[in-house]
Amino acid sequence: MSETAASSPGDMRACTSRRWWQLFIGIVCMSMIANLQYGWTLFVNPINDRFQWGTASIQVAFTIFILTETWLVPVEGYLVDRFGPGLVTVVAGLLVGLSWVLNSVADSLFLLYLAATVGGIGAGAVYGTCVGQALKWFPDRRGLAAGLTAMGFGAGSALTVIPIASMIKTSGYQATFLYFGIGQGLVVFVLGWFLRKPDAGFSVTRQAKAAPAQRDYTPLQMAATPVFWIMYAMFVLMAAGGLMATAQLAPIARDFRIADVPVSILGLTLPALTFALSIDRVLNGATRPFFGWVSDRIGRENTMFIAFFLEGVGILLLSHFGQDPLAFVLLSGLVFFAWGEIYSLFPATCGDTFGARFATANAGLLYTAKGTASLLVPFTSIVAASTGGWHSVFLIASAMNFAAAFAALLLLKPLRAGMRK
Image (cartoon, rainbow, N blue to C red; front, side, top):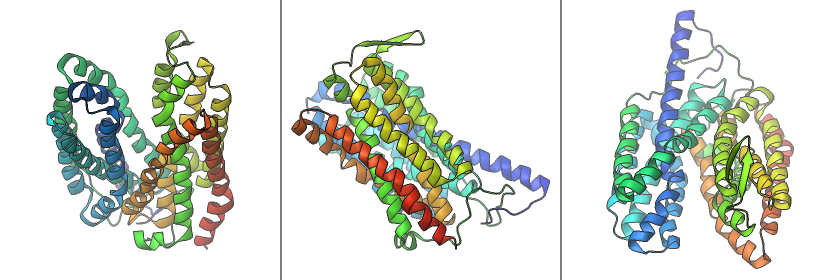
């Protein structure tokens, strides 16, 4: 696939229209799977109220979902690169819908866990496919395209959180699972028929800032390079801190005794935790295309250093000043703004480095770092309990972010430059 070939004006207009249409489909599909992760928290208490299984046992389903959503993406990416994005997405739409339909009738933990497994496979297939599409169709703007696609994963949840919460109260959680599951799965199923990979002669005239890969690496060839493992380690370091903040923000606010303290910003007053969660979700989505766009202009590693360093500083400030309700809201927003960009920067860097032909499978293999990082999250509760507070957890998370920031400049940048020689 050429990164900078010339075409006639008519061909270029058609190409531009086609690739933005493909990007739009990907964003919509991503928004349809967002609730499988971000909407889950709304169902935990209603499920427990009905069956009394205990929240810890119910949350095992969430862990199963995250692991299957991330660790199977390389396999799903291979299927996309082999059979095309349309077939994989159509099947994934069926799995996405089936997952919540199973949740609506689940009367045992086994069935709940089975639904999580089915949903994780479907969501991972959609996520990997859509990110891979962005990397292949936008070799000149990989950061921005991957960022917009990843933003859809949060935007879908933001748009539907109120309707879901309202329907749970009025119709019950089972009906909510059923109707939203069918609706979300149906949208993915229908749109999947319109997804296409770029033609063999696809090209763009705009010169990419990032130098194109010298050749297309298969996943096995990529995994044999030091660059991949440096990126994987950096991804784990960054993802662990952000997942910790995502999972533990409510317990942290409770331990700081500020969860229900009113906070006023720009005339809007909400409890500190509610305010933080609302702002965090918006900033966590907005940062993905923003830093992706920045990286298209100043380089991937330079952008990584800025964002990762900012994340480390934000976590340190949250540790020292987070017991003030207003500071807690603002600094948690900073932490999420400096974290969410990993889901655009790493896929874009992967595409730049290892080529477009196997971009879906390659980005999927790198994405398993999120699942690996999720295994570290439970230890944060153990550290907090053993040290009598969250300060040690914040210090560890901050150090991990600083390590990733300097690794971007001191390790990743020279190694990637060496591959282009």
